[in-house]
Length: 462
Ligand code: SF4
Image 1 (cartoon, rainbow, N blue to C red):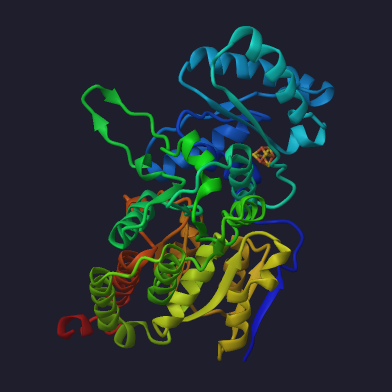
Image 2 (image 1 turned 180 degrees about the horizontal axis):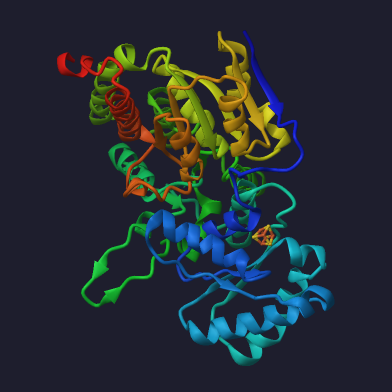
């Protein structure tokens, strides 16, 4: 019985789990108020990413492209960045923050986006926009390295390091959520409120779930301000919930400004939420209130109703963002399930040093395969050719055809999810997230029992 961590053996990728680095940088950008990112590359590098955001949230987001064409690919395309910045500033008078996000093509041709930012700061901004607050921030996200996860991590650190500014110490903490949904932010803010802890939430994306108002459509954007980012240097501490999506920024603030950093664990499930609250209490000196003990009790009660009777020994495959996958695996283990296949969609060499993965390797008593640089064919191959039997799949919508083809129940979780309604509104973190996840898994298993006429009568007497 082993828990093996190994890289996919095949060269090439069939049905990738992740998209590329610039997508992560774009996700961070839309979380900032008065910010429109310019992606320096071909138009598709924005168009398909925006489409994913729109599919997932059923909302519209603003992102720009320098729209590099053949001539730019050969002779360099920095003139396109200069033009794009000018057009963007003319057209959007409220915009203050403009990250210039590089892509594979513009990194390969060697376009100097740092140099063009200097040139624009000294030229265009002073000549045409004197007195206007504009921040041009180069963000390097070549897509031949890492994935959308590293792109998120890099961009978040770049924004924080650009703005963070030493000032008066504040009572706030920085809470870096990682690649979260609006429902997660709502759940986290509820926990903070119960703890009476003031926090700068990076990024404040609750409004990605936007209203339809009488005056017309609202364009969705995040609410993290330049002032919020500046203040990160003066916080009492930083909690980065995800190791791979925000860990770098937390480390930067600790190193540069002495803001203590706590990285992880992702608060999925009861034990990880308990640890999050204890970390919050330790950093701020605030006690965990009785109200949260009550909420924890409700969550425990909901899980106890399901665990032994329906979840025990159920074999689960999980794919998606690494912190999410590891957090879900830990939660499944706590529910007596057996995560048997974990797929991490990139080749981050740090996975083998991740204490959570090391703990899985040490403690799991059955065969568990963790594959890095994995794709969705890895999942299909295990089922189709290697006889992997599964009771449940946890992952985003890109794997739905495997669930359909092999008739395996699936709970949608992660990004992107577009084939189930409103999933972005539900948390996976905190006690509320534990209830939502467990009940979604149970309902998926119940529907499968009925569909396959497999002891469905149990549901009559339960
Ligand atoms: S792989 Fe390169 S060309 Fe394709 S979307 Fe990503 S950055 Fe753009």
